[in-house]
Image (cartoon, rainbow over all chains, first blue to last red; front, side, top):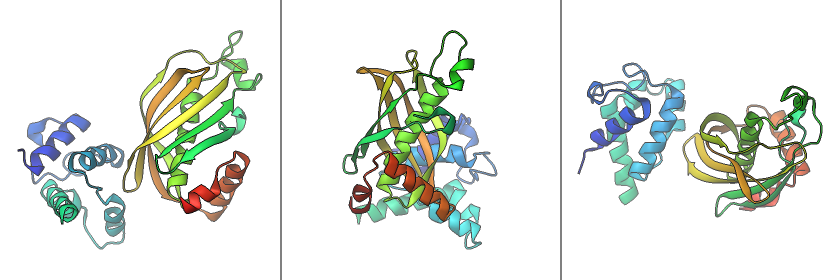
Length: 93
Length: 157
C-alpha cells in the first residue's frame, strides 16, 4: 500500500505534468512546484476522490489571508499529507 | 434564449437536489446578430455558447445545492465535445449532474441534446463563493423566477 505522500506526489505529477522525481516531501506546492490555484483545484479533486475526504481549501485560504496561518502550513507536501491523514482518521473515527 | 444578453436558459424543467441533477431547456433563436457573423450564409449556434449553456445549467444546479447562498464562477472546461452543428430555431435539452462538491469549488458533467441526440458535452469546474454583492444575488433571483427555478427546493431541499 502506497504512502499518502506517494499518492499525492503521483497525483501532482499526473495532474500538473511535473516530473515525479522533482516532487519531494519538503516541496512547497506553490513556491517550489509552481502550482497555481486553478491547478490546485484539480489536485484537490483527485485527493478528495483518492482519500474520500474534502480538503478544507476555503478554510485554509481564509486563514492564510487573515494572517492566521502560513502557506507553508498547508502547502508544503509533508504538511499537506499530515492534513490528509488527519482528515482520513477523523472520517474513520 | 437571448444570446446578446447571455441568457442561454429558457426554463428549468427539473432540479433534483438529492440526485444532484438538473434538466433545462432553451430555444435557439431564429435570428440574432451573432448569426450574421457566425457564419455568413451558414448560421450556427457558436460552440462557445453551447459550452456556456452547459455552464449556466450546471450553475443553477450548484446554486440550488447551496440553497441560493453561493455563486458558481466558471473556472475550467474539460473534454468539451461539440458533436454536430446546432442551427437557429433548434430546441436544446440541457442536463447536468454534480460530479464533486469540493471546498470552494464544484465539478459537473453536462450535456446538450437536440431531438434526443447528444450534440455537446463537457466536464466543467466552478469556483463557488459567496455572492460578492447583494444586488448580484437579487438579480440572480429575478432570473431564477423567470426561468422557473424552484426556490422552495433550494430552500428546503
